[in-house]
Image (tube, rainbow, N blue to C red; front, side, top):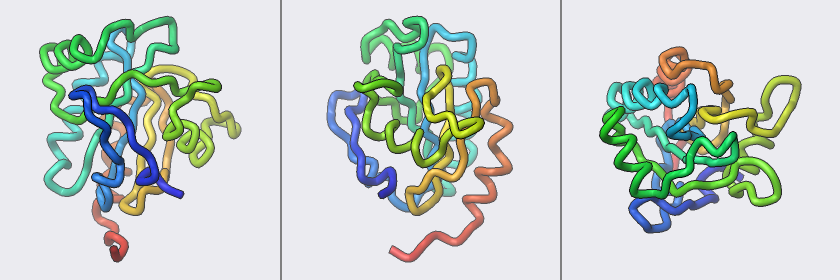
Length: 165
């Protein structure tokens, strides 16, 4: 089992298999437009721009489960992110990350990379999961961890040899 077993609906309206990102280092983040951590979009975009050519992708998954901080629809989310933070990395339709309706991808991520003291639930918007070339979660970051603090870990994964296909 790895992240390539999952798919989600892109904001553009089509289903996208995460297998499309096979062999890349991924950063999967649950996002929101009206959160105190929303300015992290800028840092996420900076990581994406810096490392994309080396096989790195950021995947944003808007979520409205935390104080309804993502009330917008897909088009509004896309426009907000582009206009305010220059976001060009892939964004997906709103999903749940906790509870019985949690998207299967996040059910997998929270089991494979639990948080502090083994706590599985996502605590808040902008929880981040770093995924290696083989689609396996290697680290989970708290919402308050700024994107620039992930650079060393991303760099390490990008310099590790990719597994044979």
